[in-house]
Length: 173
Image 1: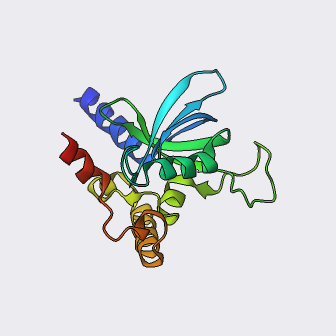
Image 2 (image 1 turned 90 degrees about the vertical axis):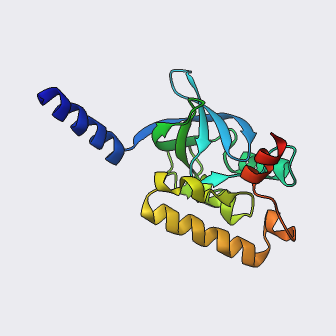
């Protein structure tokens, strides 16, 4: 019984306290997946949580990748995460230094949520199917950012009827 209690306590603690990974972005695969190299030179594939970007062969797919590259490629980042997906990628929120920040050294505070920036720039959807993996605050911020991007016709919202990536993938199967 004590072992079960301990296991439940550890499980609950891991759900409440996200892990943190720091490193440099060495690859941008598409608009919602990057590769990060940590200080010990270990690589991690990161899937940006809370968003779904157009697939590479889909309309706006290459622009979404370019936008994410502009935000994070070659930058030091901090990843806050709690779990991995079925492909063993870390599902995380990527923090980086804003391009307009007065401090640009790697030691500067990382205050830009790159996941949210992708939505704000109209380069990704808020992935509501998995929003339960987000904090209530992030759910609200990401949903609001998508509504704003739609209203401004930013990025993919300039298209009169953009196809969400999850529908595009389903049609390709």
